[in-house]
Length: 142
Image (cartoon, one colour):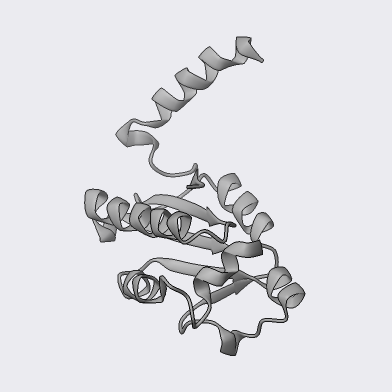
């Protein structure tokens, strides 16, 4: 395991260059990041939302595509009574895509009517994150 660490550092450094922003075959030049929220702690939710806002601020909204995937206990962030509902709405208006895990919704007996407006859905939050990573998206879990 330790022998692979230097290789990871080299790959990460190589990927940080301007020419490596997009996955092979992509036609545009946007940065892409998927953020996982699977905790029920408002501090974690705020951190995830602040991360998204800071990425937009630093790179420019037009230069980045951000998706926040909420599943498990993290689904509460997207519910109508969420303590971060105003921040979620603000980020949605700024172009951040928010998706809820349908598996979690089914398990918690949550419907789309229980969620904030403009929330997307994916069948499985973990699979969504896996797909995004395979497409070359950066991954953040606050």
